[in-house]
Image (cartoon, rainbow, N blue to C red; front, side, top):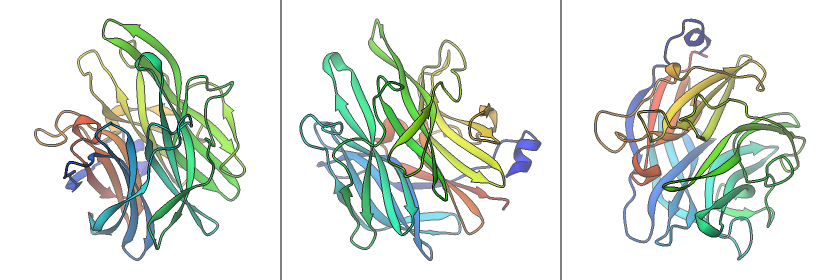
Length: 315
């Protein structure tokens, strides 16, 4: 993939269609999809649905990935609901990243907590996945990365890279809340932390990527892919002077600390019409059999489900 950077060419993502379209009345949405290879062409996919009270729940499914197409196998199952009253995830849980390490599969998830005056907080939890039963068990009742002296508002980790016993994460940390004529506006950006066990983290202060201008105020769900000495990051961001909704941006790095942002290379924008024509957000990038895949959400923060884009990996 390096040649796209060297030649300043957009990554040639091609849409292959919607993978999941929400149905039924018990739950809406199908947001924040992530995937992990299980065996052969079978992956495990986690994604998030909302109940009528807008509380998020995590669903799991098997999926077949072959020749640029992903198709869910069987009916998705509810695997993790909101937590106990007063806990960091008492108002919902959001799937963000599946990690296999030393024979154990972990799902990192974001726990949601509503605060007074329409404010909210979201911190990072970890659950253990049973791949045969498609079940999740919380590893801890509290967050593994959350509000602290470095992250006073929240800490929502969504991207991970593990080498041996070194865990790296790129996470969204709240910068500030600002009252506007339309209510409170959240400002949050991508930050970096390291760990020896994926549980206790040392945070590096400051945003990895600064806001582009006075209009931009949020980065959503970074996804990082490492190949041949380069970190590739796709992320959602908003807003611009003319566009209020999320778009997908791109940045690259040689060390994971210093990032060169170039949204023109991201390679995927809103469609001319259809389920992803108003917004495109929450990317998740992975590779399989020489192809790169991107799961992503469209209109309504996942209200229309999630789809897939594909390109040659160049490995």
